[in-house]
View 1 (cartoon, one colour):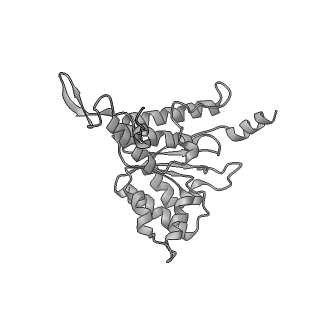
View 2 (cartoon, one colour; view 1 turned 120 degrees about the vertical axis):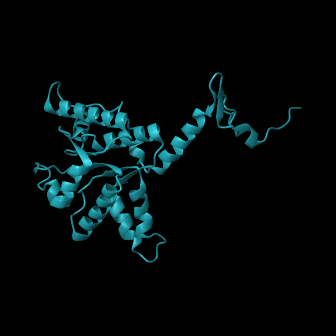
View 3 (cartoon, one colour; view 1 turned 45 degrees about the horizontal axis):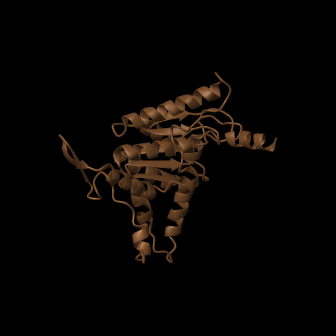
Length: 251
């Protein structure tokens, strides 16, 4: 009669064929080096801590596809935005400036920002973090509630310390005095500590049809000037691909 195999034995993963789970791979003529399996596991742990929303987990620079008619301003600007992001990743971490991806909604700004974060993380294993600015403000506000175990410093500390931060939807929240003070505090701290930040925003430097205010009006002139010092401006043009996708699905 065959011996019964326990559930734990049945599900136990096979050891790494390169290092046999020691973490070190012996290479003839080279010696011992850290095994790729350890790098992969570290990447997965850091990626889990990066707070990338589930909707964007599969975003990459490879699967970002510019939309528009051949030769149009839309497709050319999106192709250039992809090129700028690839160049950033190629040079990272030896970069002095982050990226400010601006344009109407539905052009893939968040896709590109997440793709850059993932590629940079895979390349360097530096601490990277993604935050929707509206969610960040809500977490800071919630930290003021005495019934919670959180604090403003506990919320902001990872924001300050991340080597690469993606701050999505900058300017999306109504620019009250508190919001502007909070934005200034975060952006100035990262600027002074030479931390690289990638911003996305639907607001441009000139009013658009969908957004009557400019980025300076949403952030304040001083803070907008700070972004010029911190980032390469990447202006993406085109029509909302979500509307186009919905229109095609209807017919």
